[in-house]
Image (tube, rainbow, N blue to C red; front, side, top):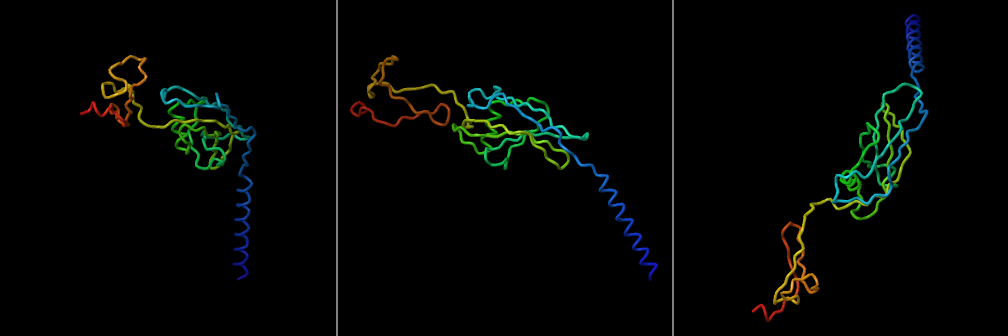
Length: 201
């Protein structure tokens, strides 16, 4: 029985020694230089009439570590004050990363920004090394998005004739034209208002 106890004791000590050696072999990764980002501008009123125009460039320098590592980067966009909870993540491979009116508008609306209202949106660079995350400085953008919907090319139309105050005079100087309301479907117009009843009989 004593021999069996000795065998178990030796085996236990051997396992502990191997475990300690493994712990000592694990390297500790230290960030030497924090990543840094810059933006071409910080106040943006997005233009729905030029969706493909570039409006923002975000550039960055990568984080540096004391060991050679393989890392991946993402730009994170989030409403300011939410500590990047629910952030929109964009893969950041080459710097600078360019954004058009449409791209930035889509990001802003997805985060909960309101069309035609200035919203503060923060950006930062997240560097992933394995399961570890390292973050750059944060930049605040003041972004005014637009309503993301169909864009129609309307022609302004007006009512003229005997039943209207404008009469038949269609010169630009006639200020009594009755404008037709543009509908949500291109080519559809409506008018709600008064006409000269005696001329409609």
